[in-house]
Length: 115
Image (tube, rainbow, N blue to C red; front, top):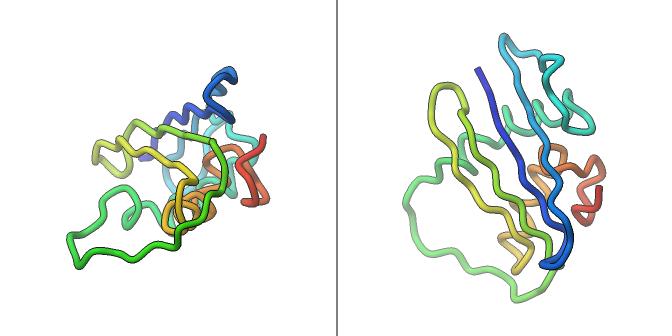
């Protein structure tokens, strides 16, 4: 069972957008409000474990590039585990995380986070 809420801000002074992804048995339910529930579920199933619950390891070296002011907060449950994750576009590692989960964050193309 997957039940996730996404709260997205395109910029600090912009209004907040809220999306939901609800899925059970490998299919999104009618309660889902993300723009493309099938793509969002595929991204969550493929990357969710590693992104929501990263394993400890050596420090990452991230490129110092800025991808934009967008911030997304994801809360809920992923296969019975509590999720509380923040996504930004403040460096290369964060941009990569954002692109991996772009369909969940309201952007089908994965380019900018724009809805």
